[in-house]
Length: 447
Image 1 (cartoon, rainbow, N blue to C red):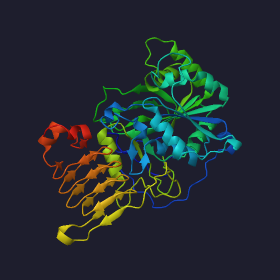
Image 2 (cartoon, rainbow, N blue to C red; image 1 turned 135 degrees about the vertical axis):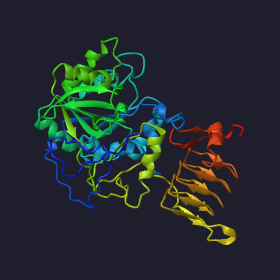
Image 3 (tube, one colour; image 1 turned 45 degrees about the vertical axis):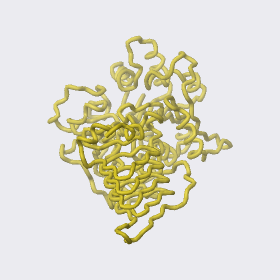
C-alpha cells in the first residue's frame, strides 16, 4: 500500500526531511491559489502523455476485464480521471493517452467523459493503442511506449514532454512543475515525495544534492533499512526536454538487456551520464486544501484505503473541491433512493458514505462505504466499511464488511462476507490486511 505522506503547505524549495511518524498535515480548510509563474505560451510547448496501458496484476481480480486506470474510484469516477483533471485544470490541452490492455474500455471512457477540447484552437485529447510501427509486439515498458511512438512524437514538435501515470490519486498543478523545469534549465524533472523507509522498497528511491539535482536513482531497492529516516521517492511524474527523452528512448531500444522502463533504465542512465535531472518537491496540493495528498493505487489494500479516505467528515482529498474539479463520463441514471423508515425493522439509510446515481437502498443499512452507480441494497442487509462497484446487488439479510464487491455481482440472500475470515479465504481473494474481494466467479464456488 502506498503510504500517505503530507508536507506543510509552505515548504521551502529545498526538500526537508520529515519525522518518520508524520503522516498527516491538517491544512487550512480554504486557501487562495497563487498563480504559477508560467506564461500561457509555455503551456503550448508541452505535450502530455498519460501512460494508461497497464493491466495492474496486483489489483487482480478487479483488473481481469479492464485496465487498472479504468477501475471505478470514489463511486462515479475512474482512476484515470484524476490525472486528466490535473492536466485540464493546469491548462494543458495537448494530451495523448497511451492504452494497451483492454484498450477499448479506456478509449470509450475518454471519448465520453473528456471530449471538451476545441480542435479549432489546436486542442486535443487522443487515445492510442500500440501502433506497432517500430516492432510487432505491444509496449514492453514505459520507455518502449515512447520508442514505439517516436515518429508521432517527433511530428508534434513540442519542446517538452510531460509523462504521467494514469493510476495515481492526487491533485497537482503541473504549471508549478513546469516553472521549476524551465527556470533550472533541466533535461528532466521528476516530482518527488517522502515515504517511510519501510515502504520505500515499492518505489524508485532518489538521492539529491543541495540544489535538488538527482545524483542517484534506484528502482524498488530491497536493501533499505526499514528503521532509517523517510526516503525520497519518485511519484511517476516526469517532465523532459523532448529531444532528451526521444534520444534516450531510441538508445534504450537498442540495449537487449534493458527492461525498457523509465524507472529501471532510462532515468538512472540519464543520471549516470550526467544529464541535468532535477527533483521537484510535491509541497502543496492544488485546490482548497494545500496539504499534499498522493496515493499510488498499486495494491488492493491501497485501492481500498484510498477510497475509504473519501468518507471522512473532512477528507484531505475532497471530491467536492470546486477550485480543482474532477470530471468523468456522465452517468445517465436517476438520483439515489432510500426507502422504508422502520416498519418490520427495515430502515433504508446510509451514514458516512458516498452513494452514487441510480442506487436504491431498500430497507438496508450502509455504514462508512462507497456505493457505485445502479447498486441495490435490500431489506435487513448491512454493508459496512466496504466498496460496492457498479450494478452490485446485496440481497436480504446479507452482511458485508471490509469488502470490495466487483461490478454486477449479486450477493445471495443471507450471505455473510467479512465475518468469518477462514470461510472467506476458502472462496474469495483476501488481502494481507483482511479485505475480502468478491467476484461472481468466487461466489459460484462451493462454500
